Length: 331
Image (cartoon, rainbow, N blue to C red; front, side, top):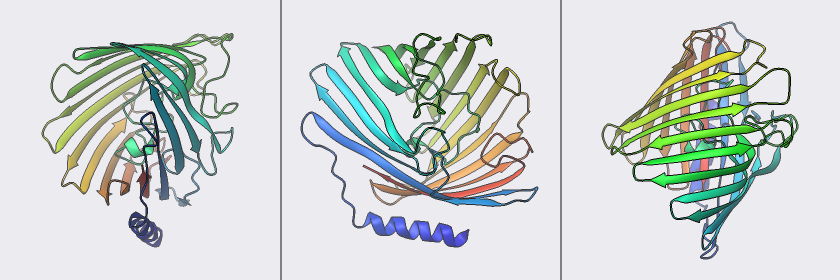
């Protein structure tokens, strides 16, 4: 494992000295994106150590994204391509991720197309994470879906509502998207964000789906808050609750997590996270993840996570340790 981590770090440092990314095409078009690759080791107490090296099939470990954004007067849009080597999504390794247009009139913005759910504190894109893993692996937070949404931004607050083909992704049939049907049940999201106090953000959201099946409706509630205590230290917390009758383990699940990030310098930062469930069904997970920034394009992140339960809901999958190092390139 040490050789894998050392090799990855050396490769990233070497690339950082030769890559110069261009972003702006003209006044209306820009290209952005990222590539991340991780080397991981899962070491459960029960034995059966496993590892991956750029072949995890997981979006937050190994992925490439290239996006084209455009603006013209009150209209903006985004199209992105996403690639996950050895993808475990069930659909394909590569495909269209974002594809939407937005019309903005003053404080109101209307969007149509394929876009990411409002819900969730931890980011979809690995470059916007402060850890490598998510706080849980069964994550009750929706992903991408297709439909329309409207957003209003006021002084110190914002509101949003969306109607989509399905609340959750149907990755078995579609590339990181909804079920593609607007006749067999729809998904809805309603959110509010408060930013009226300096350095404080409070988000609350509700997702609902009433599919055309005998199972009944699904709904998820998500609330999170973040606060910058100082210029160097920030804290955050999240709670999610989902009622989904299709779950084999039971219709309801919850998730909580607390985060703390400290910036030591312009090069080094570290995040600590503790996560679990109120029912304690999946135990508690303890995560430490430092990040070293080489330059504006490259960084290296490490992580150690310990789970105290055989039913762990994070990457370990059982009681034991998870180790990882990840190279991150963005432009």
